[in-house]
Image 1: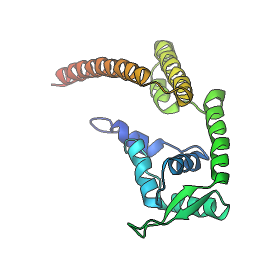
Image 2 (image 1 turned 135 degrees about the vertical axis):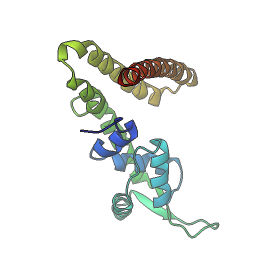
Image 3 (image 1 turned 90 degrees about the vertical axis):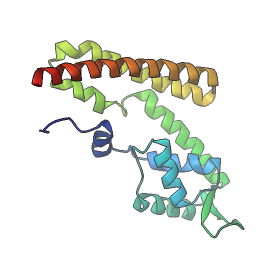
Image 4 (image 1 turned 120 degrees about the vertical axis):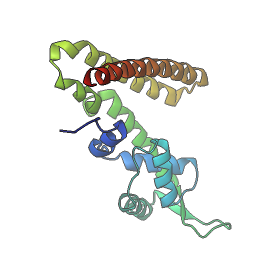
Length: 191
């Protein structure tokens, strides 16, 4: 399929990722709940928060803003510093956000709607009996992280964030070391 090295993780994520229905609306509502933003600021903020993995197109953001405004969920605010159109949530918008939060949380809790197909599917190229344990480990980690995110939305803890970050960084480093070792062995055999 590919000659040489496989494309980067960023390549795969950009080319196979799909955004669940309603995800953009939820993100826009959350952002506008924090502070007034323009359409381009919303696009940039989403890109920043996804570490560049997803940048919604103007063709999806601006029609959504128009729909939210036409239905009374957001309104324009003017600022003296700039003539840029910025939006904030109305009371109706805040109620919609609360509904969206419930749907968002249910989306993760049900697990019927959401799976982590990309990473799990990479292991399907190997005999299933050889990868059962690793697929189960991915599932457990992913499920636990989703549950933890939902808990932290209600009970934020800087200490827990630091602890999880430390564990994930240590794990990533160990896996990267294995990757380098395997890559080195592969390169050593091909020379």
